[in-house]
Length: 317
Ligand SMILES: Cc1cc2nc3c(=O)[nH]c(=O)nc-3n(C[C@H](O)[C@H](O)[C@H](O)COP(=O)(O)OP(=O)(O)OC[C@H]3O[C@@H](n4cnc5c(N)ncnc54)[C@H](O)[C@@H]3O)c2cc1C
Image (cartoon, rainbow, N blue to C red):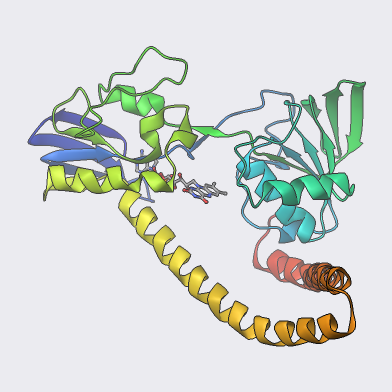
């Protein structure tokens, strides 16, 4: 979507397709729900444009047995660091704050903190990247400059909504630090009659304000607009797919619990008969840790195979 002009009942929307061909559309109403992942926050350091630096994380296999620097301390950085480590990369995390963000999902944060505590992932807090080169990175840490051997950089430093695109439509913004667009909280309508906002784009730079639980507002928009609106993007689709996955995972989890719990309970009751309660609980906890370690070993055995297959399928590093 390139431009939106016009007014309520008579909008003109210009878009380009993959081949760059221009298409014009007419719409009575327009909803802007362009998210905030298309513009990454840059580090603005020398070497950031090297092909070893990525602002989007897709898969772990290219980075098996490599030194990877993950920049950031929020959800994207946390999940990227853990996934890379689980698939055999040597991960270093650098974060400008003094700890992992409290906003990181509560089931991800302790996992990352424990990997750092166990020195499985090296972390530098209160630190920033100063320079990136082909095979090293230069960090600024509280102990002074630090040069690290490095192969790839995952700059998970956040994203921001396409403010220029929104301004080009004439949308007004509040004069606040988050650059929040002005809209009516009941109708989601902007200052331009017939033009509405939906999804995280409503939060400006405060993107975490709009989480999945806010989906009710997206539903409200449909009631207001009725037919004839153009959905610039897929807010509702995103919500529906999250709900589908949540249900699917819940069912899978219940099935797994049922399958696993029966033998576990049998073992636990046997242990309880022969050992004091605390000892049998410790045995089960130790067993769980062994299972987790076995799962990671299994992943690491498969990682080089996946990496070879991945390399055959594309010419990426
Ligand atoms: C790793 C990760 C984990 C996450 N985990 C969770 C979670 O557990 N729970 C949760 O609630 N949220 C989570 N999120 C956030 C969630 O993905 C977003 O909040 C949600 O997708 C926002 O929905 P949206 O429809 O507003 O924008 P998006 O889903 O980002 O959709 C925007 C769409 O608009 C398109 N677009 C942008 N500009 C244009 C244009 N000019 N023309 C046409 N199309 C355009 C984009 O390509 C994109 O397809 C996670 C995000 C990431 C990256």
